[in-house]
Image (cartoon, rainbow, N blue to C red; front, side):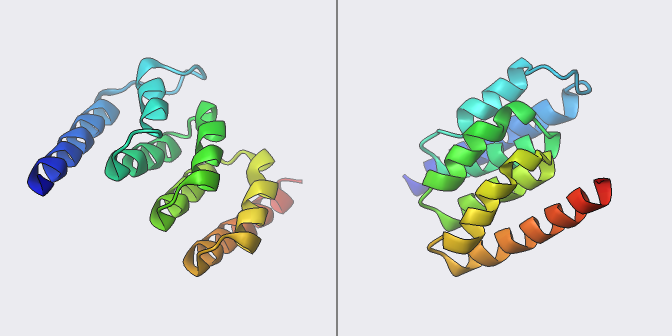
Length: 131
């Protein structure tokens, strides 16, 4: 049973990777692939959720901000919360800064707090430089 689950995760990651490689440039709209990734954020498989979050961050999909915030707030797996925070950081929407600050201060996991604190500090530096 575990082998089947691992195979499923590997297969999904392989398909997602092929889709990323073959996708076209950013158009400002949510294309089918980005929507597919957003939908995968609520998949029952932890590997699928975390892979989708990482790819959404890499692709800087602004439409994924709300679902990623939801994942950051509700995900049980601390590693997935870190991946969601990093994805939000990569997307670069300044509106999530207060949410990330709250997570940095109050998350139940020390590692999450440390990683998100570093992301917040970097985002604040970038925001300051832009002004």
